[in-house]
Image 1 (cartoon, rainbow, N blue to C red):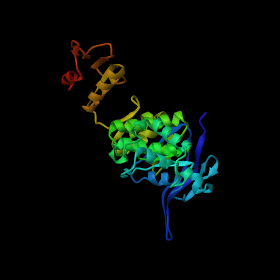
Image 2 (cartoon, helix red, strand yellow):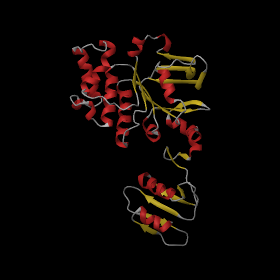
Image 3 (cartoon, helix red, strand yellow):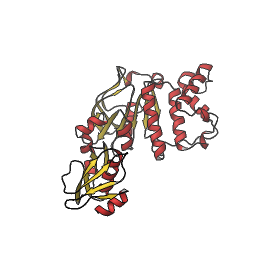
Image 4 (cartoon, one colour):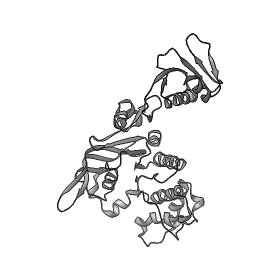
Length: 333
C-alpha cells in the first residue's frame, strides 16, 4: 500500500521582506504519496515554482504546515534535507569539461562532501543510477555534447545518486521535443513505481500528464489546489471547469482535451476503436459534432481494424463507401 510521504496542511506560500508580505497561494491541503508520479498543472504566474521552492525548503512557508514522514519540514537540518529531497530545475545545463559520470557523481556530495572522492560504494551507486536512467553508455561523454533530452536524463540520474526518497522537478520537459517529453515522463513514472520514489513535478504538458501521472494537482489563483487521479478529476468535472475559460474543453469519451469548436452540424457515428476516434476527430475539426450519442438522419459506419473503408448512410439514399477519411470528408462537407 502506498504511503503518504508529504502532508500539507493549510499551507500559504509567497515572499516576505521587512516591509510587506506577498502571498502567492493560500490554504493548500493535500498529500503526496510514495510510489506515485504527481503532476502540478496551472497557468504561468499562478505560483507553481513558488510552491515547489517552499516544499523543498528554499522558501519558508507564510503559514500552515509541511510534514515529511510525519516531521515538520522546518525541523530538518540542511544536511538532513540533502538526503531527503532531490531537486531538478528547469535551467539548461551549460557545464563544459565535465563527463556524464562526473556530474552524476556530484549527487553523492551529501555523503562525501563537495570535494570528497567517491568510494567503491559511491561509484557503484553512480553506476546503478546511470543504468536506471538507461544512459550508462554515455558515462564518458562530455555533458555539453549531449542533446537536451540526454542532459535531462543526466540530471535525473544525479538526483538518483543522491538517494533521496523524494524528487521534485520544475518543468523538466520544458525544452524538449515531443518524443523526449514522452520518454522523460515515462521514465519518471517508472522510477516512482519501480523503486518507490515520491516524485512531484510541475509541467505545462497537459496531455502527457493526464495519460501518465498517477495524481494531478490543479492549481488556480482562486480555488487553490484540487488534487486527485486524472480519472476522478474528469468524472467530477474539475478538469472541465479548470480549463473551460481557456478555449478548450475536456472530452469525456477520449479522456483528453480538445479545442472548443463551434459546431454547424452533427452526425451519428457507429463503430469503435481507432477508426471511430479518427473519423470523429476529423469531423469535429471541420465543425461537425460526431459521436455515437448524436441523433441524426445521416450516420457513418466507421468499422474496426478488420474492416475496410467507411460507409455513409443517408435517409432515402443508397449507402456510400469511402476508402479514406479524406474521401469521407468530401462526401459529407
